[in-house]
Length: 571
Image (cartoon, rainbow, N blue to C red; front, side):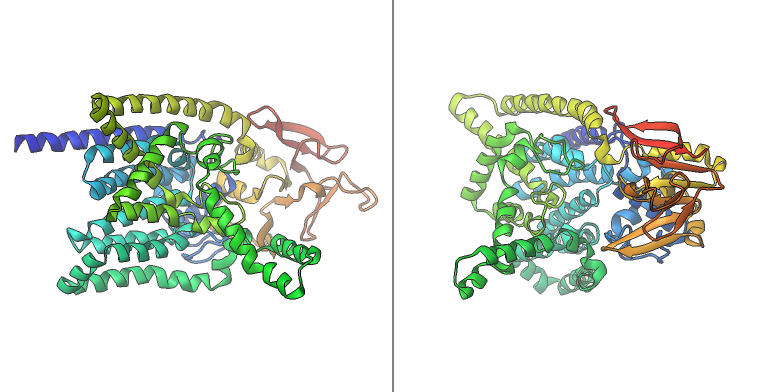
């Protein structure tokens, strides 16, 4: 009894150490690293703030099941959860990112229990959880307000509870709830979870049959819980709002159609064969296959990561290079083992790239995040098996081998964090729309000095930054009679609210022949004149992009020293 008690506390103590490490790595200087909130993060923040204050999103929709945002239509769970964080901490950068931190820490804990449930080895669970805590992929995505990271937490929890149904059938209800919640959190889960559910149902069909014979009410209730999430999801996916995001990243876009037509034009095949070879189906199949394979490439996993600088450090792998051999060893062991647990992990690994592979930016760090924590679990298996081999062959203690491995991982972690906190922040602050916070701060302090404030759209959607950092009253924004919004090219634009006017960068320097007084007027995309002839105006613009005669009042720089914004006022 005493041994069991000590063993239990040792288990809890080890897990606490790993969780504390993971929390520290995710929470330290959270508001400064990444260097600023990107436009998706401020959209999450302001929509959560608006929901909290009014029950409506920024567009005045009551408790929406999908948020219009910029026209990219964001799924709702992260935004609704962030209302709790904002209630606790206020509308701050910390509050917006904190739910992702907690999701990242939750994934560490869930990985430990899932791994233990699959293989009944606590050391394997500790090692898997440790790798989730420190690997770049899971670490980086836990420090930004990424819906994908929250969806991952729900997926891992859902799988864990599904695996436990053999012990207690009621776990199936929890599995249905968390897997269902994930499909309303991030779009990749909508493609991944239904397939994973089919695979798990096939693997655990005996257990499901036993539950059906012993406790049919649990099966029925679990199915109802799942349907509450999945049926509205499929209904929504049939609507324009549900298809909006995929429409912007689909493999079959206008560029693809152009390529297909060009291939047909230059083809020397007969008309019948030409149409059979060069069409949407063959194009999709070819590019889908290439994309799917790319997610398992060494270049993506160990050397360069993805191409979007907001999701990983450029030219740095999302998994430490030292894990190449252990991951291969672990994968080979799973193939040889062919147990139910092994097949589940292999199937999970192979299914996860499907949603990302049907888009045009693969391999994509966020869209394939549902692959986690499988690479970490497989790596842990590889290390564990290598340690066993060394113990049997040259009598090196397994604990010594694993300890040395952990020390080496800490060396890689140190190098990664130094890069993350220095070079990455300095060199890629521009990719996080750095500078808006400083700009809005200046505008807030000088708001009463100007009648009109004109802002360039060069770096994204500036109106959201002004709403967010000014903590602009959502009711006032909803009821602003001067607000100018319009829909164009699959996007919702805001050209004006309050005294703020948002213009394209190229519109700031107008041709003198087009307007009689270049230094006095601007014109927006919606043909709304911004006349500065008899009023005091402030212009927030890109470097050296201003009408003649205006006076510079402030410069805001990216962290690498290059100019982000310049601010001018008319004379």
